Length: 422
Image (cartoon, rainbow, N blue to C red; front, side):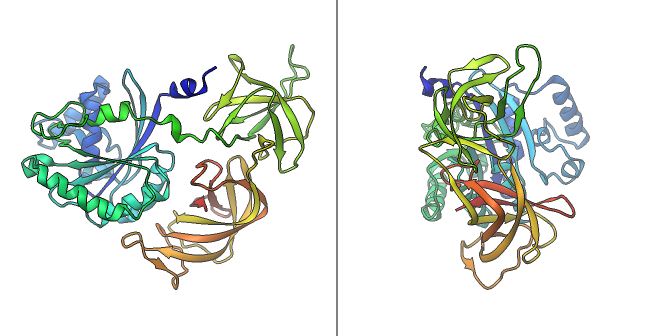
C-alpha cells in the first residue's frame, strides 16, 4: 500500500483568515463561497434581504460569515466564525477570526488547527502593526502555509508597484519569523479579482487565483508521519456475540503510521507488546495514520486506560513533569500566581501549575518583557509548567498534537490558556 497516496486522499484543508479591521476578510470569504457556488438558496435569500434592508445596491458578501447579531449591526467580526464548503477537488473549513487587538485569543483559537493562514493587507495602507501581529501568531502556531492576500487592489488602480512594495515591507520583518512557506496574491475581494477567477485587471500577475492555490496546496507533508503517537481515549469491551474476548484501545492517531505487527510501548507504564489488529466500523485496516480514528488490539493483555499513549518502541516522546511552553492567556481574569489548574494534553488530564513566567512578548514589536510577570487576557508569554505526573510530550514544532495543551480553571471550568511546548 502506498502510504503517501493514501494520505494525499485526505482532502480536508483548514485555513484561517486574519487581518486588520475592515481589511475585507469576511468579504473575501463571502466571495469565495459566492463565486464557487457553495451557498444554499435560503442562505443567499437571507443575505440578499439583509443587504436590501441596509440599503446596499448588491449582495453584501461579508454577511455570509458575520453570523452574530452584534457583528451584523457593527459590520465587524467579533467571534471565530467557522464555515464549510466543498469543491470537486477538496473540502474546506474556514475560520474567520477578528482583527481587533482585544481578540488575539480568537485568532489563536481559530488558527490552532489550520493548514494555512490567509493574512489580508489593505493595499492602500500596506503592512501595519496588526499585520505583523497576525504573522507572528501564525509563526508561533507553526501554521505551515501563509498566503498574504493584498486586498483592495481596485482602490490603488491595480498597481503592480504598490503590490511589489507591500511584498518588500512584509519580507523585511517576516525574515525574523519561523515560516516555511509564504505566497503573495493581489486581489479585490469586492470585485472578485483573483479570488475564484483570474483577474483581467492585473495581467501583470502570472500566478493562480486564490481558490486554485488552496485546492492544489500540498498538505500531506504537514502531518508528522515519522513519530507514531496514539493517545488512548477509551477501552472497548463489547461483550457481545463474536466479541466476547475483544479488548480494543480506541482513539485518534495523533501522528505517524501504525501497522499490525509493529512493536509498541505503552506509556507511561513502559510495557511492550505487538499490534495485533487495527479496526474500524468498516473492518480491519492494514495501517492507520493521522487523523484517523481507530481501535487497536494488542497481542498481550496490558492494563491500559484513557490518557495512556501507544508509541513505537524505537521512537518515544519525552516523559516530563516540568517543561517550558509558549502560553496564550485566554481568560478575562488574570492568571493567579502558582494556582492549580487542570491541564488537558491529548487525552490525558491532570493537575498543573504555572511555576514561573519567564517573559512576556510584545506582539507588536516582538520584544521580550522580563519585568512584567502578570498574565492578562491575550498575553503571550514563555512559562514553566509543572504537572502532578509526567506527560508524554513532543516539541510543538515537531508535533502540533502532542506538543499542545490547554489549561482549565478548576473553580469556573473555563478554558483559561492554550500552550505550545518548546
